[in-house]
Length: 135
Image 1 (cartoon, rainbow, N blue to C red):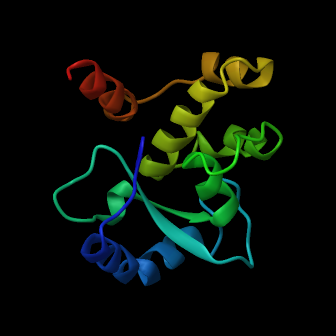
Image 2 (spheres, one colour):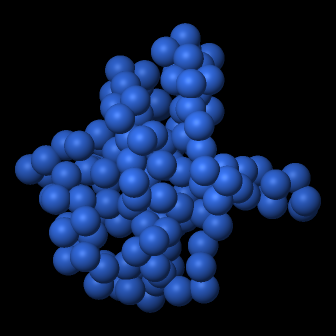
């Protein structure tokens, strides 16, 4: 769902920092945390070179849970009720993918059921699942 970056790719991502800071208003793009160190995280599938349109700017709490370093905390992810309506495509894609992981929770299932996605966002959300079933 999300990509760990090679050293060179990470350097290119870090160069997007100013643009990501402006876009996010220095807040985590999923949970809206502010006053914390934010880091780029790419949303799969990846373009050939890092691209702001495939990158999130997230706090460490979100990154750790997304990458599986810590368990998903349902209380933390109530922020998805706002993030799924983001006008920023990688934010919306990540939010929907996380909702699917939390589908066992009533609030997440209800939110997912009420969701309408534009076709290109829906295709992007499903792209990783389709690619993994083709292996």
